[in-house]
Image (cartoon, rainbow, N blue to C red; front, side, top):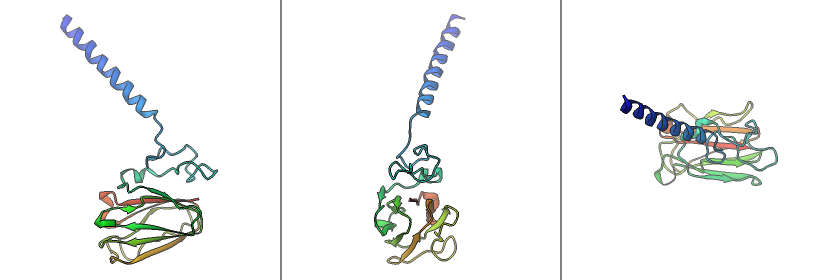
Length: 170
């Protein structure tokens, strides 16, 4: 009987410790990690003053992370598609000003660019063809993004592997 009580107290203590750890993890800010923790500004792609981190959608949580780039102040920005034969976009996360032309340069074959989500009036149509139609290595897909907000996109043949990216137009 005493052994059962000790066992219950021991297991109860482990449960309390585990619960405390989980709750502490829930309160940790996740801004800047590519997750959807963002900066708590309502998801407008920034904090309203040109600083902060965009609130990337949770769709991008499993994106292969090839880094981020802040190209605000530039008229053009480039995203490498499949650099070094990888299944990734580089950079994965890009910040630009409204009116910036984004050039997707295909550095390896069997890839495309398809929109997952974008703001109303956004102009990211993606590459021509269906979900699995790919673009030749050496080709470029360019788009000028005028509408502010977050654009999420992916490669149709490799979406399941995390070949996804995001653009914050500010």
